Image (cartoon, rainbow, N blue to C red; front, side):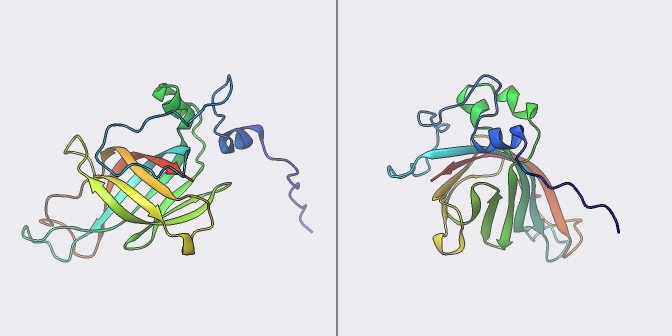
Length: 195
């Protein structure tokens, strides 16, 4: 018989630190007084607080029904890895985001309209878009406010904001695209998660 893999009896130190938003060397970060970037989205409700700022890196996904310049691409979801950016944002040290490259979870779509966030230690959150605004730079995808669907979520998360977006816009039209193929466009965003 093949030898069995060793049983893990405790979590690695860096995993515990990630789950506690304690990813900088000298201690913890407090999120209760970290303001969102200026935006016109409805503010978080007063009964919840910021629990995590995640950097999402991945693709916004689109498809085309035909290859016509008159046809616009249709969004078919997104896929992104999530990284803990809480302390970097709280301490105005955005250069530290890449110092711990370990993913804390994933963002994807459960169906064409339901964004989902799966973060071990937090739980699974399915959400719906309730507010949007154009990004300050028109070359980037919109900023969003999402509300958790409590009936299909296992986390305590109530609201998620997609802010500070970079990239992700669909092509202007479907000219030259392969009908039915998925068009992936790189993007990144901060996801401000409230519970």
